[in-house]
Image (cartoon, rainbow, N blue to C red; front, side, top):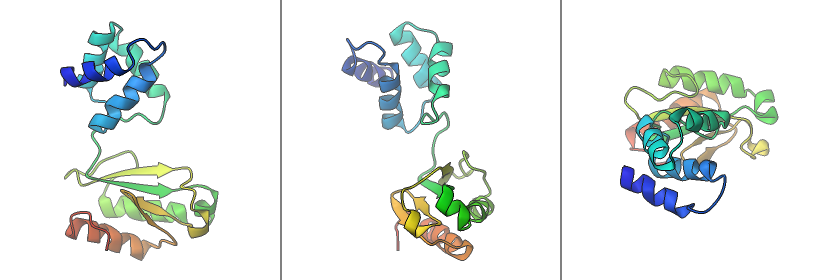
Length: 156
């Protein structure tokens, strides 16, 4: 991991204020910011781990737990909220037995709530990986998640 961290840091060698960009690249490579990655960054950048965590925790884009194999996002923006987005979120939470921000014990699914997917005409919306599911219902949620479990993540 240290050699990969060094390569990422070199990309931003002479750029002031590059910590956020470096963190984004590390997360892009590993899917999240592990404690090992933070420690390696602190050592290479010669700043404290606390300083790195201080920056990273300020921004909601950074994740500190390993994501599941499938990323499930439920929109709770205005249109989705009005059309039952919270009920969809509750159904997903029950189906996966996790809350938003968590990953299932088998590491198959991570759940995230988002403010807007930009698909308001399709509200309520759920996204699994890069597949958008519109006009979603509780029954559809169960079928979609079961399909991902059965078919190894292939949209049917």
